[in-house]
Every structure is written in C-alpha cells, then in structure tokens.
Amino acid sequence: MISAAEALTAASPAKPRHRWYTVFALSVAYLIDSMEGYTLQFLWPYMYPTLGIPVANLAILQSIGRVVSAITGPIWGYIADRSSRKAILVVMTGVWGLWTAAKGFANSFSQLLLFATLAGIGLTVLEPAALSLLSDLFDRKERGRAIGFMIAAGFAGSMVSVVILGAIAEGNANAWRYGFIIIGALSFASGLLLLGINERPRGSAEPEISDVVTAETAPRIEPQLIPQLLHIPTWVFNMISGNIDFMGFAILSAWAFTWIVELDMGPMVQVAMLAMMAGTVLGHLGFGWLSDYVDRRNPNYGRVAIGQIGFVINLGAAIGFLALGDRGVLVLSIFGMLFGLSFALKGSGAQLPIEQNVLPPELRSTGRALGSWISAFVTAGGVGLSGLLLTRLDNDLQRMMLIMVPLPILIGALLWIPLFRTYRRDMAALEARLSGQREAISDRQSAGQST
Image 1 (cartoon, rainbow, N blue to C red):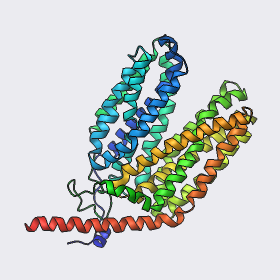
Image 2: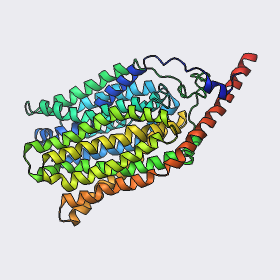
Image 3: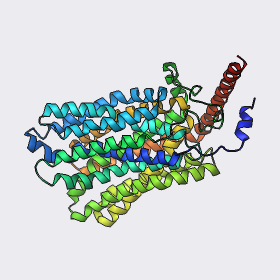
Image 4: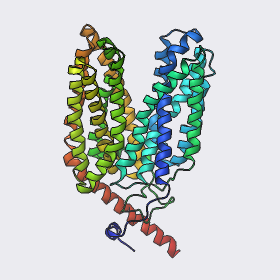
C-alpha cells in the first residue's frame, strides 16, 4: 500500500477533463446570476408607474429577497457538501431562474412579492457550490486563476446589466417586462450549460487522497463537523476580516453614485464609476493568475502577503477617491480604477483561494455559505449605520464616506495580519487530516478486496 508521503512525491496526474469548460460554464452562470440580482432595482423606475404601486415598495421587495437568501444560504451550503453540487447548480441556478422571468408577467404587488420571494431562494446557491467544485478540479497552486475568472464574471454582471436593462426598458411603458423575461431565460440557458460541467469527488485535487478517493469514499459533511470551522484560525480571521472589509465596499457602492452626481462635473463623471467596475473585473481576471505564481514561489506566505498589499493599496485608493475626487474626473477615475484593482487583489489574489486551501473538502461549501450569511448582516448594519451618520453630519456625503469607507478597510487589514502565522499551520493541519483520511480509505478498500 502506497503511503501518503509517497503519494505526495509521485508524478502529477493528468489534468481533469473539461475543467476550463467548467470554469466557463460557472462564469456564465455567475454573470447571469449577478445580472439577476440587479434586475429589480434597475427596472423599478419603469415598473411602479405602470403597475400603479408606491415607489417605496421597492424596499419591501428587495428586503424580502435578501431575508430569504440569508435564511437559505447556509442550508444550500450544507446540502452542497452532502449531495451533487452539479445537480443543485443546474436546478437552483438554472431552472429556478424562471421565477425571475415570471416577474415579467406580474400585474400586482402581491404577485411581484411572491415571485421575488421564490427567486430569492436560489440566489445564494451558486458561489459556495461553485468554489467547492472548482477546488476539486484545480489544486492548491492553481485555484486563484479559476476563482478569479469566475468572480470577474460576477462583477461584470453589474456592468452588463446597466447596458442591457437600460436599453430594454426605454422601449415603451411595459418594456421592463422583457428585461425580467430575458434574464430569466438566460438563467435557464445557463442551467443547460451547467449540464456539461465536470464534478469530481470531493478532495480529488488534494495530493494526499487524489489517487484513492472515489464518489463512494469521498469525505462528506456531517452536522457535528460544522463547529470544526471555528477551530481553523485562518478561516475565522479571513472571514471576519473579509466581512468587515466588504462593508466598506458596500457603503461606497451604496452612496458613491449619489455623491458623484452632487459633484456636478457633467455627464463624463460616470466614467469614474465605470473605471472602478472595470478595475474590479480586470483585477479578478489577472490577480488570480498572479497569486498562483506567487504561491508556487512561496506557498507559506505568498498569498497572505498579496492580501496585505491589497489592503494597503485599497485603503490609500479609497481615501484618494473620496478626499481628492472633487478635483476632476481624471483624478476620480484613476483612484476609482486603483480601488477596483486592489479590491480584486485582496479577493481572488488572497481571500478566496486561502479559504479554499485551509477548509477540508467536505466543509468548503458550508464554510463559504456561513461567511456570506454573516456578511449579509454585517453589510446591512454598516449601510444602515452610514445613513444614521449621514444625518448627524448634515447630509455631508463626503465626510460620512471618509469615515465609513476607509475605517472598515483599515480594521480588515489589521485582522489580516494573524494569517502570516496561522495560514501555514492550518495548511499543515489540513494535510495531516487528509493523510489520515487516506489511510482510512485505503484500509476500507483493502478490507473490501479481502472479502
């Protein structure tokens, strides 16, 4: 029987089939999922006059969708760690998108509320399941590029939504209906693409068990395993740091458009926000590859260092964007682009691949879903607090954002520092855990052969 140590030194196996098709299909699904998330707020100005309902009802529709998503997110993460991730993605990301199409046929607020509730059930399925699935196709030194490609598509969805939905809605009073129908149909089509993805057994990309794990012997989550997440310091610090840091991004996203309009720099000022969006997309595409290269050179500290650099640049870019942005569109655009690039450097370059590299294969979807669940409450609280502070500051948006955007980034940067100590240890602990699983699998296989 080959030992775990011998397995680690063996020749690298052939790359899994269709792994880049899988990245492509998941990226298309993520792009459409992101567009789906923006559809209601972009089309609302055209919807409420036609339906004869109050403009304020948008808050109810968005809130119910977020509440439902927050409740179901951890549940989907757990299900994805126990059953077929491919089947869940096809049904809940693809077919379930037809509820979004149904919004286009709504003729009352009660119908919209029902369809928004049902659609919200499926909006948190994709990311946890997809990240776990990609981690079984790409090993620890290659995950950054695959994750970055998919996350870039998700952020691109917001940019595509502005163009497509805006063009559709300008047609006539009921043209907004076609926006929902088209996005819902695209979501269904993405489910057909997902039929061809390659789902390997959990742990297939881990060198300790890659040559012995099968669909029957792959590790699976059990309820009693979930508390073990709290015993992985890197996951805990990464999750807390990332959620606080993302609060700053969410606050900037919520108020930046309003502030930019108040600057009264003319129509070209919108270029600054496009620069920020473009920087985020391009950063996720490029920095995933960069982090993989750095990881190969320094597996213990490379990705952690990239994350810390990203925090520092992102903090400076946020301050520059808000403090100096009123000097002109060019200054605003430069700092906006830098902010987007550095935000992506933290995400695909460090936070997401590090999370996948320390979580056991059977806890990856659950760990990501729980982090996103906590993030929903942290972000909602942060945005709400920003509104209260804005009132106290006599509606001075610039002063409010100069407090509420850089501060979470700074706190996130400080909470990131412990990863220089914990990441190496947690990777070693995972390797030991997988080696133990390898021995258990080999023993079961030997016992089966002897009988």
